Length: 434
Image (cartoon, rainbow, N blue to C red):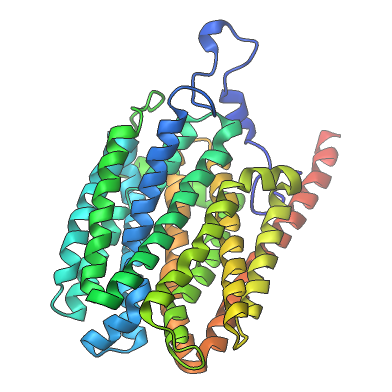
């Protein structure tokens, strides 16, 4: 399948392949990058897994607690949702500048600094005196966390062999799902006993432990070459990426998948506290155990692509998400839970495929390419959180589901368009050859 066929490339870009070490080269040219079973790979995987746990646990620490935040500050669901949207929006805004810093100062250095600032702010969040102060602290936290996603994928693209890249990124995304799940489950039960402030404080302490372990475990980079901080160089790199139709399709796919996910999980707590469910906060927090499904689907994305191709994987992810959205409309708790399982599995599979395809496609400025993906991804999260709450206020859960279905339709449309563009391009190549 041609690399432009779907909005997700099926093979490593030709230029990337050209730059990879040849197996017939002299021994000095043997690929020294990490691979499964090789030295440092497990440490690296676990370190980035922990970074993913800390990132998602902090980023969405208030999401499962929004009904309690609303009650404490006397605000609506839409106003409380800004404690999530501010964090994800700030991350989207700062991820590109942070990626430029990682090109100059190194991936590991920037990830360490970002986690240090984010966990420090996380320990201050429980003491927010007002909803405005809470939103500001969450925005600062999101801006700090912007140094993680793009730097992590760029680190992997440089330090891991191409054939193992999808699996390695899938493990990082799996860490995201574990962080999102554990953060919500822990905050749900802690908040039920001691309130939302103690709950987010507990997440801050857990994130501190993850940050320390990450710094101790992550191997020093051996294939990083410092880049330039000159604005013109950065602008040219960004312009080149945005001129690449394949990358732009991948960015849109990531944003749309995250719009579904952000909308659903921002509003689900409100739905489950209302009739006919009327669940307590601890039980609602435990609902997020379905994130374990995302851990599995993200970490197995490489095998899924191997069997179905990237186009088939994206279609399967979109179909799975759609099925989950429709099932969640039922007033039956088992069906709602099954719907959440399918939404989660579809989202994490689609995200892992799209994000790894960006790393495959970008030959130069990988940090910026990943940063643009992450920016689009978290814009989708921020938009999904806010619009999902607005849709819920206007039309109940059906309104939120409608928003999600429209986003999935966008994913499918983009993928179909990419397939058509690839077929047109493949027909042109023989003509050009003559």
